[in-house]
Length: 146
Image (cartoon, rainbow, N blue to C red; front, side):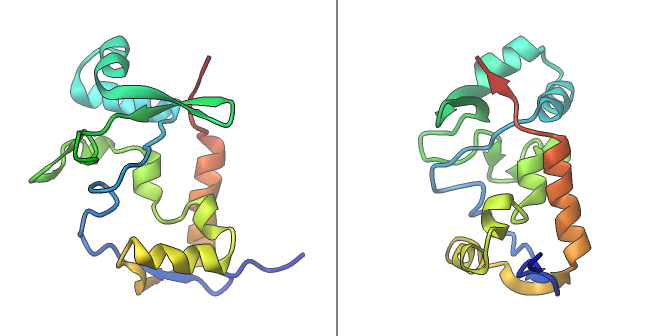
C-alpha cells in the first residue's frame, strides 16, 4: 500500500484571515452532533434552528444540511467579532483543512494555498493527527435529509 503524501506531516497554521468563513460561497455541512451542539449553544429548538439557520443542499443525489449564508457569502454566524458560535462550531470548521478532499493528493493540498494563507505554513501536524481528523469525520458523517 502506498504511503500518503502527508506521511511526514503537513504544515498548517491558521492566519486568522477568516477567508474560510467569508467572501466566497460554500457549504458548511452539519453532522447530527453538530446540530445538537449548535441547538444547545443557541438555546433554541432543533426545528427553529433548522428553519432559521439551515438549508438543504442536493449534492449528487445526497441531500445534506448546511448552514445558510448572508447575501455577501459570509457564514450566517460570522460577524465583525468573529464566529458567534465558535465554542460549538461544526466539525467541518474545526477540522479544516484536514478534509478528505484536500488530502486526496498533494496537488489538492497545495492548491488550497490559493484560498488559505495558512496552508504549508507554521506548525507541522503529524500523520497521526491528520488521520485522527479523518477518523473523526468517518465516525461523525454529515446529516442526510430525505
